[in-house]
Amino acid sequence: MSVVGSRFLPSVASMSLILNCLQQKILHDHKNEVWFVQFSNSGKYLASSSSDCTAIIWMVKEDDTLLLKHCISGHGKPVSFVAWSPDDTMLLTCGNKEVLKLWDVDTGICKLTFGSPADCVISSCAWFPDSKKIVCGSSEPHNRIWTCDFEGNELEVWEGERIPKVSDLAVTPEGNHLIICSSREIWVRDFPRGKEWVISEEHSITSLSVSSDGQFLIVNLNSQEIHLWSILGNCKVADRFTGHKQGKYVIRSCFGGSNSLFIASGSEDSQVYIWHRHQGKPIQVLSGHSMTVNSVSWNPTKPHMLASASDDRTVRIWVGSRNPCQSPFP
Image (tube, rainbow, N blue to C red):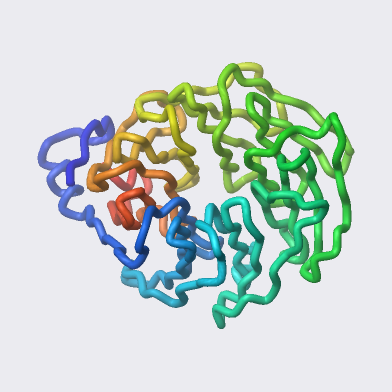
């Protein structure tokens, strides 16, 4: 393991002190590439999904150790992503070009397998803040966005030529905005006012993440940049973050740290990159994985804890400094 590039440490002595607090915990329970990882909203759980067709729910203990709670099996194809309900009682898992399943977090039992309306292949989904309905997006065989309840009943449907091809989507924490990524566009819908606007990019968008306050979003581009935009559409130029490697695969990033002051991302060079939100170059590079890092997630209630998922079949838990004035991974 090596950690390089910090700009926050005033001396070698202080660097040594902080580095002694940095730990890696390696979870080996998946049998194939790990594609996605996400902490729950309370920070008490972590979920990971893999091309081994399973998802795993972990309990995060007070001493920062993790304990396997459930290994979820039931998909016939790789599990491409997961999504926690806002109240953390349920977990959605999506098979790659397969079905969407709803799981009870406490028991690990599948509560519902969602049917695919009009033979649509679900590419992404997200929860509304009341934990009572979800929104799904599809681009195969045609572009379609719909909301549904937990009996699988469709509530609202948007389809037709004007609907974008969905590669990723999100609902802001307060439920006021639906954000959809499509090729080179970010489509934002304001639910209360029914207003829509589009943010254009010059390169293909592979993934989306929303800040905890619902004010900002970041997108990973295959041009090896991450762009930060205001969700309200009041900025014309994105903040840009560079240094990681991305050209062929879906790489995911996230906000995190104390007051969401930092951004983390996976990378095709097997490392995890961390930026301060106001600096375009990495302030840390975390090494340890041996293959592409596909996804990262910052614990929302333990800002010193970051998880990463890799093609090397592992999930790594990075536990760093608890000092709120600096990056937790110096």
